[in-house]
Image (tube, rainbow, N blue to C red; front, side, top):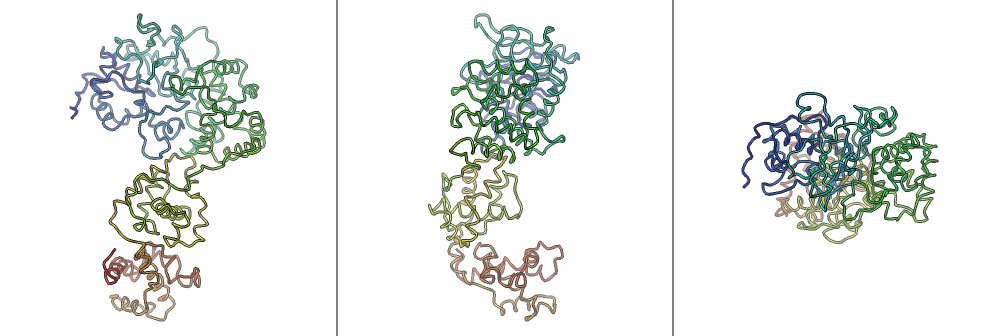
Length: 622
């Protein structure tokens, strides 16, 4: 059992925008301690570990977060702000790193996407120099988390391009070398000032040690106001179009459009060089694209290669690439189509390995309009068109099928459905979500039996017309747009939940009560037992007939685990339309109607016990 760690005698308050690695460097400098010792003491690594993994910058797991906060005296909110976790909804590469394709709760994984700098960082010398306060004069300013997002190319505060390399050793700042990614370069080195370069060129001489907090007086190339405005919009996850803040999903989609278009620009360069903000920035991008080796985010990847969907080396090259993307995406639709058509007409083959994840990213996360326009043009450009939607398997695999198909009700419970829909941000009783519930039941039967989807629907008693409306599970597929969800993982969770439920044989119930209806005599007994009296509930009235039909349908639904619309009372649908039973009657009987009359409440409260009594009378409950 791990013993609680003691609180440090002194700590520091995190600086605005600071990242975890920078905070550790500043605190180690204040305590005159090697970073590795501080990493061990704060619980970021085990006592005998020698280096913190780079995935710590993504987020801190619960136990690590608790230990870090206990030893530094920091709140969990401030500690989380040192990591990428708060940006999971605004910067697509962070979503890929923390969510993958699962759509579940964020978790730090050993996945390092493009456009996310985990082996080095850009920086602003003036920020590292600090704001002049006593604490920052001694220990320097912040290494900012935003500098790790490769779409960031400028410091808005100091109106300058970010730097990429150390001016002395000329290696990327804080560059991780070797076969693994670490949070901090040379954590065993004697305490250095946080703004000193820690790169090791010659192991015999130790870290470079050059100060990175001194601006270059000869540098007269500053970003224009337009570029600074673009940088601000990128930081706010509204890269083009809307002048106001976007909801997280829309911002995520548009940032994805931005990065996909950047891949198209790279693949066809220099086709759009004339759209660069200046000749010098166009030359910077040209220089970046001609550099040997992989992108910064792929530098130590075992599969690193030239990829058009990745980031570029310098801040100036990045500014050119993203400014061209913004200029195209802000065009009116007719001009946008023309510009996209010009790009796609010059594309290399779409199956070129250098595309990386471009097409998957486009289909999965881009905004609907941009995705439609690009896919339409690709369809014209190549003889074999790209699919316009994610191809989901016709047979969903589940590792463990510890449930029986007989245990699957046709009326899928809401709590079961939410295991799939909640991670996607969907709930309620809309037609789309009703279709999802029907699909889920059929897919679980299919996975357990090997039936086709239509055979599974017939097994559940679902009308063929309802099955034909599903297509290939499209209601759920459409809800994957802009979200990340690994269907096999979610379905495994759903299957495990179903397996934990009390064993019920809904298949036998559907057969046993296939023709069950509530008789008029049974309804009369129910009325006679009602403590109050109302004329309209006596036999022969039209309203009494509607109530009997609705109550009968809901009892049958409980008996068979099926939708009330399929009850024998209502077959064939529609039967005399709303004159027989309408939504208001069902809503009232379910206790959802605002004007809940006493007799409806009486029937509503009677439903579960009445259904259980029928089950007991018909034999042992399966």
